Length: 432
Ligand code: ATP
Ligand code: MG
Image (cartoon, rainbow, N blue to C red; front, side, top):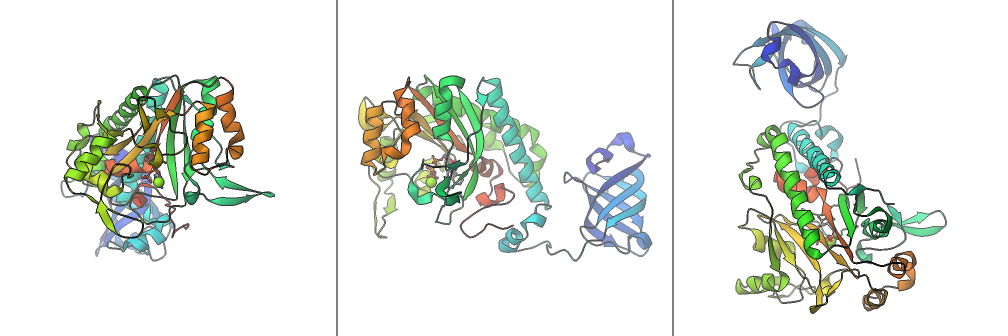
């Protein structure tokens, strides 16, 4: 059985067998104290004869049969396995990861660092985020689909595209499934997908990965408000269920969830123009491409610094609504009531975590969208099938994309987004 099961009053006095790995080891004259970690990361102290335990090293794989006893001195819950018989599966070579390690070494040895309790805890939180995300869509009548990740066209702009040789032609790794989801709404209604997205992010930040898990949704006949409602419900549902299910793991990584408990709809909606005014009134500076600083102004995109400034005192996310079209991709629908402004919104997580979702309505007129493509220097000819969606029964529609790692980072309070994924991909890392 697992260590987590054995640590129960029901088994006190009974003999049980637990399998796992040597997490910590203390050898004494007669006995050895093995802190055994099971395959889900729970630990139990096992007392075995020193002689039998002599070959043991950290991370050796073992099976211990012993009597469960309750001893308040035993670490992690006051249960231990006594007078254990020990079967050794593998005596581990000298383990390269000790208690205090540089972040770089932990990344180099990520295949082993996955066994640390912090990584295990975060991985479990992530599993719950995925589980409840799926559950929300299922309960609310959205259909799950998948889109290809090898594609011909750019969604988010050419500068972050990964190019690859696809037989005898060029292709790219997908930056977003959105264009495909847009094709699906005509016959499947509201759809959602969870697929990897790839972006050649050239700057090192604590919130960008080169490969991330992208939760995306798209639906026909919706308004911007419908989309924002879906986003705030989804995010609240995921957070409330995750903090309940993963209370133990969040406690282990010392995440106080008081603020997360307050994440309930509705989230504030701040017009982009007001966000800029607020930032200007606080004298916020932005760095231009040439390195010069100047005051932020209408028309600037929001950077992580500006997002932090807007959300540092908030406990709940906010939607920044109505960005200028110029800072958003070609498919964003223009607000008929406000020329130059997109019917679009980004959800910013509180306390500086920044953008977690981006969503809005899509331009559905063939003329307007080809115009916009040309303005952005894109060749409409390269988007043949996508433009067909505006030719054959176009409807008002919209959707959103959520970065799973961004959400997990916020929930776990992880400093770096790399901690939220088991095998991170960044500009400087494709291994392990
Ligand atoms: P940012 O401005 O932070 O780079 P973006 O505007 O490029 O984000 P979108 O193209 O709108 O992001 O993608 C939708 C969502 O995907 C984002 O809200 C974010 O949660 C997530 N996301 C985008 N790029 C990355 C990345 N490189 N690593 C992890 N998550 C990402
Ligand atoms: Mg980006």
